[in-house]
Structures are given as structure tokens and as C-alpha cells.
Image (cartoon, rainbow, N blue to C red; front, side, top):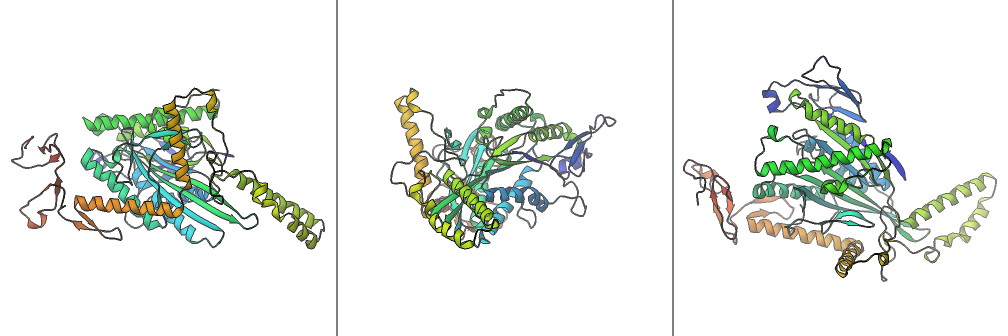
Length: 548
């Protein structure tokens, strides 16, 4: 087990149009890994200095020799985290900061050349490294899931059947997880890019139907990366499983600055609640590391976001945080607050372990010991022939009969008998003794169903996972066709047509090219049309507030 601090980077963006219009002045200065901020109201006051692992100056253009590009950010943070994933560690990268700070640009980026963010670059690099593998005994599998947390509710962005909110559960061994979240098997970067695109569109579609916009929710893109190695000497299949969590947080905001009212105000309150809880968790973990308090309560469960990121904050994970900053004097308070959060996050230590089953680790350590002793004996003049005889004598050391029962992660033994609870994070932990607790029948049944569901998921073959992924893709295309969007087999959109089964309205325009470009779906029951508090919003000289 290795205790490593959270890697923290800060990045300052260029002025946006709002700041340019208000003649904003830059209050951030960077030199090397240090960042300083000047109080615009007290210019004579000494600037506040902070030191981080990386300070990225992206305020100017790429002609500036100090300019930090998207590639530079990925090279420093993304590549290191991907390397940890290949080593078998859990990994998490999240961006934090106020609304419009540049978090989504750093994490997702844009479609243009050299503008992609950390998430697409990491996914592409992952498959590039997999394709470079020349070892016949080593195989890889990749599964992805994509969810958003909107107003403290979790929604699956990849499964079109998932209409309602998903339940967050805590398993005694596996920790917090989202029940029934679809985990789709992928075999190439193009598959991941398509799913990411579908997920982002699901957020955007929801924005038009439910008053959500991409900045109103936290998005968590998870990659489960499995490395399977077949050991010739012991005839064992061993696995290393890494969970890569890539988090695009919604921005913190002030109601007076954002002008939020009604639904927007409620959304903002929920965003601020989860981010405040994240701040409290960071502070509490930092205090535990400083040993200011012997027993400190960490409020993980106060928010869905922190509950799901529990392992990534001070648990079994290698974690990096990118704080996105606004350079403008008008955002001084928010920028200073972000810098202070980032400064606290530096002090958090995570205890990451390599996620492999205990038998695999035991065998690996024994083999290393055997190799070390053989080298020692060889150095002392023992002939290679004698060592060869020893090797034959001990070649059946890895026989399955001599080994303890394999845990869940081993795939070589098919589970015909009732399996023991799964190994998590490379450690076998026993369930708490259920006999000692008085559990009602309903709760016992629920626990049984939960465990059986996890067992079924872990026993699924790769082919079954691929079939499930293909079925979900077909459902998504059928749903789009019903809504009036034609899709090619390669995933590219062909165009929009009038849906056959769904009643709808189309627009008419003076310009014939603009006619029938908008589709308004009429839902079951009552559909209201007008300008204010309606299902179909129209604008025009003769459109009333409640038109029809």
C-alpha cells in the first residue's frame, strides 16, 4: 500500500467576452509551479502566494513561450494517471472551480485539432498502448459507464431505457456504487468516442426537455480497465482491475452574479450544496493528515457526489485535481476561494493499492523470491544444471490443489459452487457477521438480491457484455428513429424526418429552406404552447403567454 498525496494543478484561462466588455484586469501571476493573486481593491497589499504541483498559464495565446496547451496539461497529468492505471491502481481526475472557469474545456475540450481535453486524449492513448501489446499471455478488456448527478439525483447517460433516477447503494465490500448503471464493453477508441458523444447528447436533450444544461450537472465518465495474464508456469489466469474515474464538475456560482431565478436557482443551490460538501470533505481530510484532530468525521454521505467519490478522496486511488481559474479582477473572491480549496487538497493522502487477487499477488511475490534466491545461488557458484533440476522438482508449486480457494477476480475457475463474496481492491474482507445482527426478512431479501446481482455481473463473459452493448445501441437507434432522427449503421447521423408514430408540429418560415427544420413533439395528455411556463415555447409578434 502506498500513501501518495493528491496531485494538484491550477490553470488560468483567457478573458471571456463578458470580462473584456467590463474592461477586466488580470489579477493572477504565475512563475514555475507557484501562483500568486493580487487583491484589486487593495493593490498595495502583499500578493497571496500558493505553490502547486503544476501551475498552467493559458491566459495568453500559444505564441507565448509560457503558454500551457491542452497537450501539455495531458502530458503532465493524463499520461501519469494512465501509467498508474496500467500498474493496476484506481485513478481519478477531477476539475474544480467557478462557473465559466474552463473545467469542461480542460476535461472534454473541443472537436477541433489539438483542442481535445484530458478525457478523449486519455481514452485514445489507452487503446494505442493496448494495440502496442506484443505479449501473447496478456489480454485487455475495457468497459465504460457515463452518468450525471443533477439536483442530487443520478441519471444513466448511456442507456436509453433508463428513464428514472438510479439508486446509490453501499456494499460492505465494494463500497458505494450506483445500482443498475449500464457498463458497456468497448473494443476501440471509436466505440468510446461514440458513447461519449451519445452521453453528451443525452445531457443536451435533457436540457431542452427538463431545463437542464450541461453546466447544471456533474458528469462522471468511468472506465473499468482489466488486464488478464495467463501464467504458463502455474497455468493460472490472474487479473488486475483499474477503475478510472474522470469527473467534469458543475461550477460553483453566486445567484446575484448568475441572475438565477426559479428552477435555475434551485439547480444552483443543489450544485453549491454538493460542492460545499466536497469542500468540507477536502478540509476534513486535510485536518486528519495534519493530525489537528484525532477523530474527525468525514461528511461523505452529505452529498451524492462525495459519496460516490469516497474512494477517490483519501481512499484507494491515485487522484489528480485541476483547479480552473478566472483571471479577472471581477471574479477575485471566487478565484481566491478556488485557490484555497486546491491548497487544502494538496494535503490529502490516498492509500492506493494494486487491484489484483491475493493469490496472484502471493504467487508473484513467491516467484520473485525464487528468482532472487536462484540468482544468489548462481552467484555463489552453483551450476545451472543443479538449478534446472530444482526447477523441475518445484514446477508443480503453482498447482491449483496446493493453493487456497481463488477469490472472485480469478477467471480460470468457473464458479459452479456458491462463490464467496468478491475481492475488492485486492483484499479479501469478510462480511460482518450477519447472524449477530437482527435483520428483518425484507432487508435480508434485499441484501441477497443485491449480492446475487453483483455475482451475475461478475460472472458475465466478455461476449455477453458485447452483446448487451450492441442491444443498447440498437435500442438507442430505434428511439432516435421514433423521434425522427435517421442514423447510419456506422453511427453517423443522416438527417431528420417526420416520425411516423409520434404526433408532432413542424415550423413554417418565410425562407423555404428554414421550413420544417424544427420538430415539436406532442406528449400524452395536455401539451401547452406559448411563451411562459409551457411545454412548447414559441416566440413571435402574435404568440400569447399561454397561447393554446
